[in-house]
Image 1 (tube, helix red, strand yellow):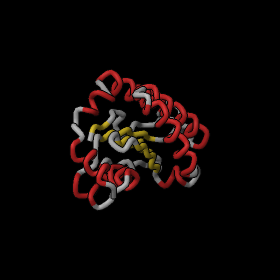
Image 2: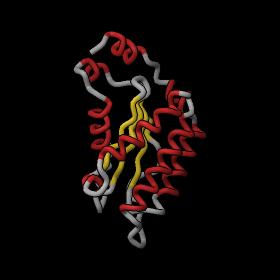
Image 3: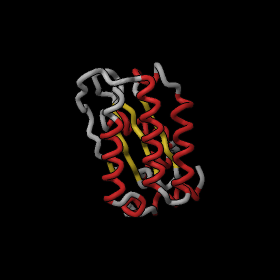
Image 4: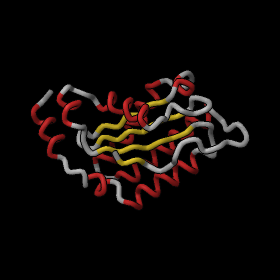
Length: 165
């Protein structure tokens, strides 16, 4: 655990989320998720967090571990076909994680999600958060449509609205 990381997390203001993801960007992400889910049987959630809480961070919690916590707390696993997918963005460490439920993990290997995360990080480093998020959702849509085509009348099981943690 580096002192620099601890200081960054402890002093990161929560308002950095609004600067990176203003209302218009959040609306665009919500619309992209809604449109995406029409072409596959998956359920997407998008969550963004400025920094980790002090105690877990001091214990060395990684963005991946936090993403699994968020996956559980948002109940992304609670879909009929185990087809939930979480995109988790942690701003201070500039980390992005994609966590997929077991129904999707059975067909899509983690390295494909990791590749989307790494490609998403490039525009984020240039403060192009909306473009990076929308491109990632587009890539995820193509991947999910290939492995999980829609099954007739599909209900929207999870909210499409991005979550600010």
